[in-house]
Length: 387
Image 1 (tube, helix red, strand yellow):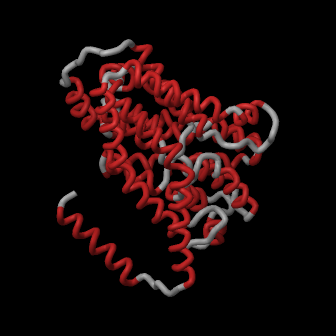
Image 2: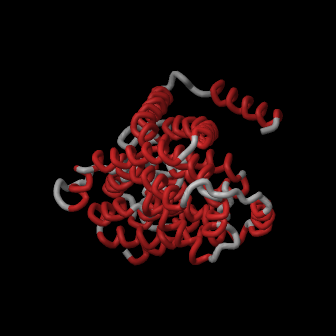
């Protein structure tokens, strides 16, 4: 960032705090919500979500060959293969809009095409099997099916459109990756796969949310979550000790640290700002929730668009979007806007946008966010017209 831009941001921040009516009760409440949301985020999402994700991102950048990523996710990879791999990877991880960021940064920096990388960025938070099942159970089977169809199709559509819009920039970028020297692998493919799978198992099961019903398959998996997560962690430690040299482990830690420095500051700043404006579920902040509920009734274009935009800026931890939508629909939210928010909300957030901009630039970030919002609005209008 240039000195001029830094100075402009300093001026804007000064003017914001200078004219902020600090004695107003709603402003005080919003400030409390901002801190409370960051506190909640730090306790619930950093140690078990983001830190393991940073280690996985670091491992991707150090241990997975650039040729492998180029082969399956690069600009010249077969589209069917690239977008299937991106969508399936996101489905398996089932992470929130912030936890997916270091993973996205890892594959993007190693040569993944903007299309498959964008598909992965959307599919990680959006195509969450457990969340879709919970949506069908709580909000109705038709809402669950619509969410599943919309999320899966959106990941591919967004990826293809991003690849088309930025095809010239991407051709230059991919040429740069093609010129990198090819290094000899220091271990077998199955050893690298074992290590990555072990970390993914820990990430997924350590964050496995409690089911609404105390019986059945999901409840059984939840009761074993820490056993499985511990096995994943022990397996990762064993692999690191057995198959990696001290220099490789140091490089891994340095890469992990680098992603942390890149993502954490903007992420925390975004959480603070989102909490100040919108607050946590069930708590008021600067913008009263009744205004949001009043604006998303019916099935007009404006209602669906507003629901998409509001969802895009709000932060949803995994599975929290369902009870939030249940409350909003009880307050009069239409079914079309509800689906629009479901498709835009989990995949985006203000912290998410800030970090994406830092990774792939303003132009690509604006295009990605606009695609998510517009497609979600369109899906909400179509769904609301039939239901």
